[in-house]
Image (cartoon, rainbow, N blue to C red; front, side, top):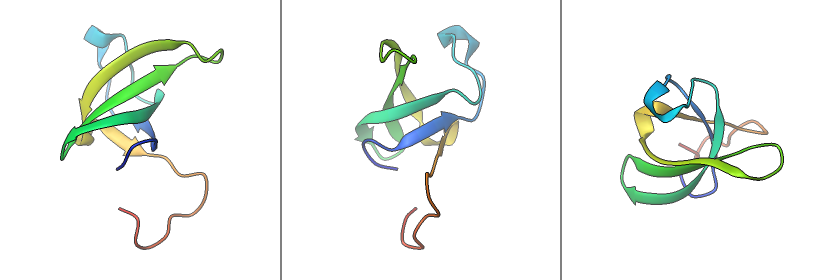
Length: 70
């Protein structure tokens, strides 16, 4: 995964008020497997900005991925 990839949560994180399936955007990569993800509402207002592990995220595609994309 890389910056500006659209991702979905793969697990519930009730302590953060985030739940499986919520969609966010990777805005920073701190180290392999650690990503800062921004979650925004339909009006573009950020409602969460959290550092999450790659195992908590699934990359979303708007088109079929190229074979070289992870």
